[in-house]
Image: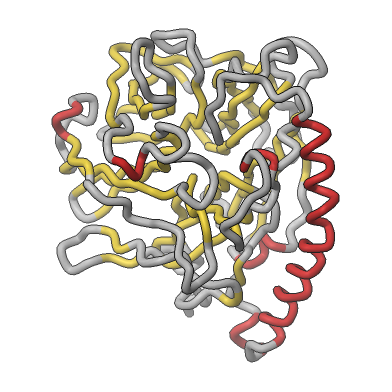
Length: 366
C-alpha cells in the first residue's frame, strides 16, 4: 500500500471521481477479457486463467486450502472492507461470487485505509490479517486480526482479535504469516523510529496467531536506488520454501510504475531471526515492462496450480504508466497470476509480468 504522513482531505471525493472515470475502462477490460478467452480453443479455455484475473483488486492473496479450493482476498480500491472469493480452480476466481466478510468501522481505530488483507488457516481456525487506521488520523495505520472458528470462512462470525502489538507504535502494515521448522512467524512492514525510510520489513516469532513473542528483527530496509523512488519503501513480504532455501519477496518504491519486487534468500535450516542468514539481491527481480504493457507489478503472494506442483506468482499491476494525481487514488491495480519458473540452480526465475490475455503454462494438469 503506501506511505504518506500527510492527510488528503479530498481523498474520498477524488477516489469516487476516479472510480467513476474507470467504469468505462473496466467495461472495456471485460470486453477484452471476453475476446481473449474467445480466441482460445474451448478445451484450453476451460482450464486456463486470463489476466487480469480480478480487475480493481490490489495486494492479492490466494490461499489454497486442504479442501482443494482457492481462497482469494485483496484490497478493494474504496479501502473500506475485506472481501473474499473462493473457487476450485484459479481461473474460477475471476467469476466467483465475492462476499464482504468485514466492513470498516464508522469511527474509532478501524475506520480508514483497510489495506492488504491476507487469509490464513491456523490450528483449525481462519484468520485475516489487514491494516486499518483511525477515522481521526487516517495515516496512523496499524495491523489488525480477525478470527473465524467456523469450518467455512463464508459462514460463522469474524471476531476482532485486536491489534498486533509491535516493539514500536509506528506506521505498520502488510502482515503475513508462515511456519518454519515447527515455529510460526509473522513478517510485516513498519516505519523504524530514527530511520530516514518509510518502511522496512521485520520478522518475529508468534505466541499465537495475533501475538508476537521474542525479538523482532529487521530483514531489509530500502538501501538501493530502485527501492527509494518516490518513497523509501520495503513492504508486502511473501515467503516461499523451496529447493533447500527460504525465499522472501517484497515490494519497493512508490505504488506507481516504479513499484517493483526484490528478493531475500536464506538457506533452509538457518536461523531466520538472524539477519545475517539472509542474502539480498542487489537488483529487483520483477519490474514494469513496456513490451507487455504491465506497470508497477508487486505486492505478491504465492500459490500452486491445480496440479499441486506448479508454483504460481500472484500480484497486481496496472495497464498504463501515467497516473493523474496520487497513485493511491487510482483504482486500476488488477490481480494477475502467472507461472513462477525455476533456474537450474534452484533459484526462482520471475521473468516479466505477462501481457493481458490467457496465461501461458497454467492450464490444468491431467
